[in-house]
Image (cartoon, rainbow, N blue to C red; front, side, top):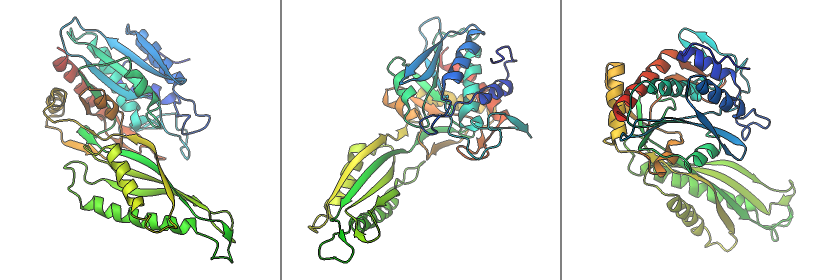
Length: 381
């Protein structure tokens, strides 16, 4: 089905990866999922003498491959995700187009460019005479619930990890986390002409929204993280009411709180609960709060060996020391760090993640591969 004998160049490999639709079915009903792309990776690696296994998580396959060292060296994970978001509004999203040194197509930037760099660096490691193991984890479902990363981490560990999400060839040592919450306010249904009987649940939610706005201002006034700035909160969805001529008996709000390293889920839940407690002095105010999902923020010390090794390698390859940055968006690096694996994020340049036009700079994919293998030769020697 696929050409496994293609030249082992980042451009040709990336084009092949983009042609395999791996739309996350949790985001797009009927999406292709990771099966075909996972099988492509297993076969492509096998054709080059590298064994890879499939790891299933609720029907979503991830790929784990290992180049074993001779023993006594440090082990390193190269991590990328297989899935992409949907391609609505894109023309021929899975047929890569190259223009002016860029490859366009769904997944080129987020993150099949980084995946191609990982695959080729893994092949380079087979001839590097290393003492430590190099492990590829190409995981499912990062764009939704990270089923793949969580499953793989029950079977795989290492001394450090590099996630190749796009960073513009900068070294990312921190990113924000998030918590999702649902708040429901309860009123009393009554005919719209009977304010003496009805309690308006939507108006009660207005009080909550006012408190959230105040919380947002407070978060912006707190001490900023040096790389990530401030935490934030916003209302995402509000639903409520039965009909135009009735007092609404229920209103539901879903909100997102973006968190910084050091902030805990428990602390954020207490923060939201305290906000509601302050409104309960009014006997008419009734509300419930539940946590929907939480993902921790990520941070790694800049003197961690994997960070300093990537910094040295990048400086040699790029001809100048790379910038150290934080990212606002969440990544699987947080799960790796929570598993006790020191992790850094380093990947190619481009634009259009989740957008109707997505592209990756092909030269940056080459350089990313070069930085990875230079890091491997140093870290796993």
